[in-house]
Structure formats: structure tokens, C-alpha cells
Length: 292
Image (cartoon, rainbow, N blue to C red; front, side, top):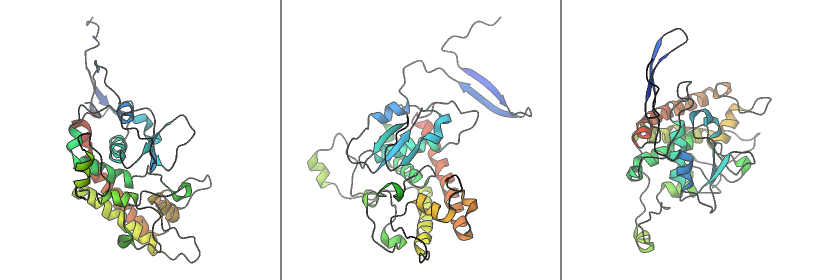
């Protein structure tokens, strides 16, 4: 008989579908050193100050993706609720995007998300900013004015023509570079001297913003004679306006929307998000959030 497996042995398994078709290989590697998971990594950036929203997290594997989302306030269930502030917003966006840019399958269902190998991701501004774009327009962003102020409006009044001024410009100021991520090496004097530099996005992230802008603009153009108007509408609120809810109170799918033009705009956004996800995916492995 073959010798018993040592705890250091990697398992390389062939994977087949139910019809016997070969799908590829699945490798299981033991991680011998104690490696922090992604939840432990995020805890280092906890911020108890005024929050813009709450990042809801559960166990750090693919099978718990549905319980990782963005909402206005803390809930009461057993989940983890982490403040998202102007200081840790990009960290939260990385956490969110790393967990959602790769679809869950029966093959990766139990794969764990880890803390990154080191701090090299810190210098990758494009990666951080692209993660923010991905989080803002993802379906798991459940920020809604029904729960409080929407601090996550990504387009200025000039860009989308709302009928009233917004209640919060927090995200807009952040995108313009008016609110900066503090670095440990920065002195107050140096911070004061820094110029405002708007966040830069890759072409695929810019396409996500462009597609999102068309949806916001289209919402604000609607005739609100017989329906309540919401100048501060979030993407979730706009989806509710066009898609409605079912008898159980759940948001209908975009396919249920009666407005064909909205359906096309939303399909464009989904396509742009898929392309952005493909751009983020290699970085997830490069920085060690997932291990091959």
C-alpha cells in the first residue's frame, strides 16, 4: 500500500462533471504556517468613528458570499458588522471585491480567503481604486435611503441632474481626493501640504462608472408626478423603482422591469462589472488573498 500522506503533502485531484467530462484539476495544499484569514486582516483597520456604511461579513470562504454585503447600519444577527469610514473605505472595498470578483462554484465552495502575503498591495492605487468601483456598483451594495442618509452617491449633481441637492457629498469628496488615506509615515504638516489628486481608475473601471452614470441619469429624468422622488437615491433605490418587489417583499430581478431602456442600461452595467472583475481576479492571487 502507498505510504500514509504527510501533513505537508499537496493533493492534486482530477475533476469531472456528472457526465464524466473532464473539468480540470483541483489542488489542496496544506498551509502549515499559521496564516491569518481575510477577516483577521480587516480587523487591523477597524475604525470606531462616524461611519458611512457597514460592511457585513461572515466566515471567510466562498460558501458565505451571500452574507458579505454593504448596508447602512449594523444589524442584530450573528454576522460581523464592520464600520466603513473615510479612513478604511478602500480597505473595505478590497475586502468586498476580493470576495465577489470570482463566482462561487461547487469546486471552490470551501476555498478560504486569506490575509495578503505582505504590503505590496498598498502601493497599487489602481487595484484599490478599481475595487472601490466594483463595490459601489455591485448587487451586494444594499445602501438605501430607506435606512438613512446615502453617503455613497458616486456622481455629482452636474453629472446626473437631480432635481434637488444631495444630503451627503462624502463619497464625491473622497473621489476628488479631498479626503486622503492617512499613511503611518505622514506627519500632519506633510498631509496639509498634499495636493488634492482625484482617484484614478483603469479603463474598465471607468466603463463601470460610465454605465452607472447612465442609470442614475435616466432615473432622475423620470416623471415623478405620481410617484415620490428621491434626489439621494442609491443604486439599490433606483433598482427598486424600476424593478419593484415581489409579494414576499424581495427585490425583483432586472428582467421583471417594465422599462426596456432601463433593462438595457442595467445589462450594460453588468457587462462592465464582469470585465472589471476579470481585471481584479489575477491580483487576488498575486497578493495572496486566495492561494493556488
